[in-house]
Length: 74
Image 1 (cartoon, rainbow, N blue to C red):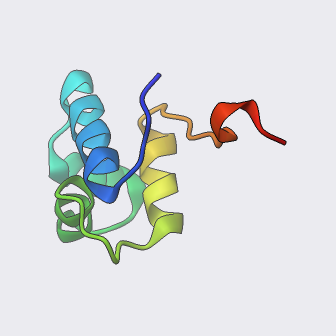
Image 2: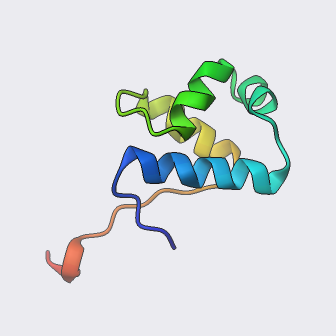
C-alpha cells in the first residue's frame, strides 16, 4: 500500500504502474481517451490536474485509491 499525500506521489505511482505494464504515454492516452500532455502532466505531479480524469487513468492501470482516517479516529 502506498500513501498518496501529494500530486507528485500520485504521478510517480501512475508512471511506475504504466511502465510496469509496458505502456507508452501515447498508448495510455489512447486507452484513456485523453492527450499525451495530460498523461505527462499527471505523471509529473501537476497540481491542477483534472481529478476525474486522473482517477480514470488509475482505474485503467488497475490501481484503486482509497481514503483512510488517520490514527483510526472516527
